[in-house]
Structure formats: C-alpha cells, structure tokens
Image (cartoon, rainbow, N blue to C red; front, side):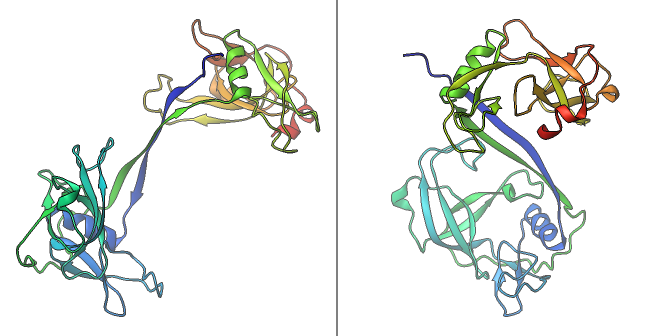
Length: 313
C-alpha cells in the first residue's frame, strides 16, 4: 500500500479593524482595569457591550461600569490548552455574569481541576500585568469568596483611547489529499502535470478533484497537460507576505495549461510585473528538490488569442 501523503498547513493572517465609540471605550477601559457595559432602551446592561440593541436594533451608547466580580452561569473544562489560549495549564471556559450586568462574558477560569468548578460560583477578574487595550487584558478569572467589588464610577471617557485592533487569525491543520490529488502531486515530482477528464462533459480538471464539479460524476481517466499555458487573468501583489521571501511587487496569475479546462494559479517571473498581460504564454520553472514549479516565465511565443481562453476566465 503506498504511503499516505500528508502535510501540516497553517492559514494565518492579521485581521485589522477600527473601533466605534462603544468598543473603543470597552477596550480602553480594560486597559485601565475598568469593565464597561452598555445600557439598552429597556434597561438591561450588556457585557461585553454592543453598538446596537440585539432585540430592537436601536443604536446604543449609554456606557455603564460594572464590577470586576461576578457569577459563573455555565462552564466547560479544557483539559488540553491549545496555542494562543489564555492559560497553558488545564482550565475552565466559563460564562460569567459580572455584578451589574445582565449578560455573561466568556473567558478562562484558573482552577485546579473540574471538581472545583460549579455553576453559581463566585469569581473575579485577574488582570494582566501588561495591558494594551484588548480582551487579553483580562488574564483570566479566579475563584473569589468576597462581596461584589466596588466600581470606580467611570463614564467611559479615557485619555489616549484605543481606536483600532489587530487580531491574529490562525488555523493549524494537517492536509491529506485523496486519490486524485495524490496522483497529481506524485506526477509533479517527475515534473509532469496530470489532471483528470470527466467521462460526461469531457473537461480536464487540473488540479484534479476526483469528481467533476459540473456533472457531479467521478473522474478516473488521467490526462497529462501543459507544461506550457496561457495567463487568463492576474493581480499585482504589493504587500509582502510573512515568511515568503519574494520581493514586491510581483504578479500572481491564473494560468490555463494547454489541454486543461480549469486555470490554476501561480506566480509569474522572468518579466517586469507591469508587462504581464492576459494571453501571455508561459512555461514552468522548476527548482531542484521542490515538488512544484517555483514560478512560470514567458515562453517567447505570440500571445494567445482571447477566444482561446475566454471560457476559462
């Protein structure tokens, strides 16, 4: 039985957003060890605050300080913390209704074990030593036996308010290709590009998917395509990607390999970025020891006629 191909993959990007007055006040308050909620038109206090009433859709802006102490409304034990979670030892995820609030806030509870956590237990915020104006300014919750903590009387007006945040979005997973894509990857090690033909519509798909996305039938007939192809459309990349050693600007394009009915994407090199164009004829450039082409470069052939690739745009 052949070895099953698999590879660890990471999808990661920074998500940048600006903050309105409500979220700005909430995060700035956390930096100052103050928890703010927002009052709805019917008198409820929502923590964390939102900009619009979830029931009436009214715009909200009446900020209310609540206590850093509260009550656990429900919980779940996390026996194996993952990268980026609040604590690196086992902890409980808890929903906590802070004193003065009518809704619950999700965060971590530092507890020695699941037998020490219960619905209704009293907890308080443990503040992070270094606070920047983010939800992580709350390091976690911890058990607390005292009375509700006093509030400072803050109205939500702070110096140097937080106006934007950058949140890192990341997904770690292991990818295992199926039969069709494994054959495609194996062929690339021999510097060949192989797709599969649909037995119904006769289109050749590269990379193959094991089934025709149009007809919904399985595909098994392998077809070698390329290696040359045509640029069908492209974009100029001006932002340098993390961990990618390519100088900007560069061009990323959809390329219809000769004999294929689906364009694949790849980088274009060997030509100034502002000279890349639709219809440009290209060929792969391989790097020794690498499974796939490093990039595609112009072949020197005349540009392809638009009618030959317009269906692949």
